[in-house]
Image (tube, rainbow, N blue to C red; front, side, top):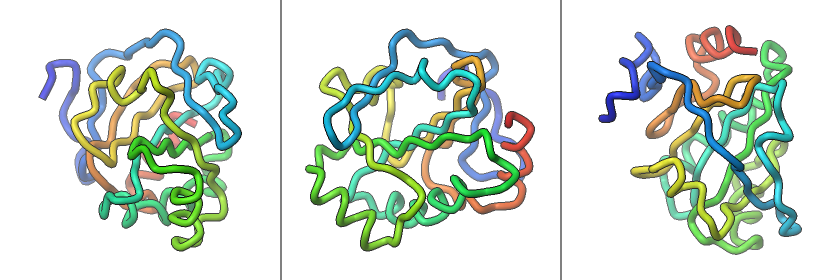
Length: 159
């Protein structure tokens, strides 16, 4: 574990808060029409980027709760970007969402530059949380239940 991460939040599995905020330059990813989106366009919002793939069982397990998190009334300023890093095509990724009943999230894909490398991901699922100023303040390494009350209470402090 890198020294840039603090201890896990008590009672919230896999959540690691950064000791120092991290700033990244030009974080971009693609939507289903191959349009390039930039994280900097979402300043002023609390942003959660979730890295996943169709073949990842823990990703499949947590995706429905991530879908519900997007509609949580206590987190109205939250924007979630589930980014497929499994090199799945749009049809396969869309079927994955459809089979799980995902209604509140859109599909996004990693750019050839690969955000996964930029963030030094060691596995998926991994979720990275950015504050309203675009700084990374926490990561979830592995899967969690995004509907967990402790997690929602903690996250609402950043909303």
